[in-house]
Image (cartoon, rainbow, N blue to C red; front, side, top):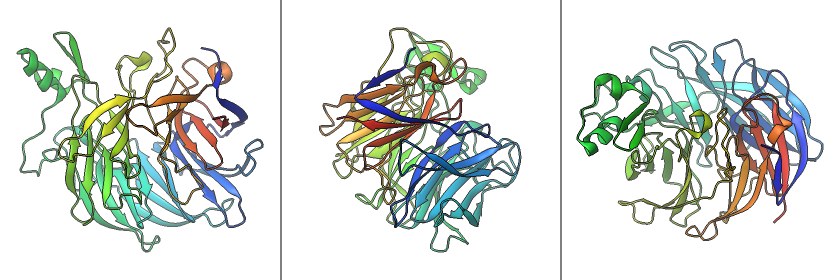
Length: 428
């Protein structure tokens, strides 16, 4: 694949160094003087996160680099609210530490200062994968929890809600997971995709087939990536609603008016016939529509179609997929690397971010990044696209992992298999 630019100008390409590989964490701090600092999380150690001064996006400058305390730990994700930075700690070995969320004071972005830690370590826990700092003063985590023992190890992440009134001493106030996942649940286990597909074709499924990632019956395949919470979006336009992507469990809208007892408002269950790896679920303001991206998890798009879906949530009891964003597919899909949907721009507040719900942006691994006009959610259209092609190094590179768009129309993208960070200007 060759580099492509459509209605975008490439302003800069920055090598982040330090064996960095771009994670799923991009967030911006804007100071009272107007200085803009982009924080980027890493997929793996030794780098934890990097801070770049992007006040002039044509000439970014690395102003800080933070390293992890050792191997077997990844940050992967981060979030900002005001002068507070939250960075996840996920471990490769269950029960290891540190696992959870580390909190930093970034009032001086070039001198982050650790001020607090939420400990999610414990027996069976691999820590925290995702964190969202909402305007309401709470943090929403996709995290393992020592008290949550899943019946299936693939279902290891639950929603955990932290009160950050005192960031030096975060307090957990609530948890939620799809009923039937824990050994302690009274409810029966939810139907796994293999069971659903086998029942549809009247064929048996063995315990080994049920535990496998992929199962075939008739002319269809099912995929089981786990019923695990992945991303959570809580926006001020709907402050009592959490939009939760639950991987193979589909997508949920939760009532969080009582954060100690989240309850289900809507459930979109689309695993089989679609592959369904719900990654990011973002409401388009208060329009009654939302965008839902899957995560393409297989090389060469073997789990196609993982897509960015348009979801109508206006009838809470009956959310439905009403469309999909048009992804920039090549004529021939390479066999190495992921190609398809992944992260979305999530319209955060207080970060100098684009908050027009008429536009959406998506990171699409080997397909690059794309921007869409969603002013009419029933008729979305592609308006801009960038794919780095051979600029990054090695087979399967050019795997754009995350995207952030600021209110100047500058889009930032991270590559997950290299240390490249791209800054692009929209030309709309």
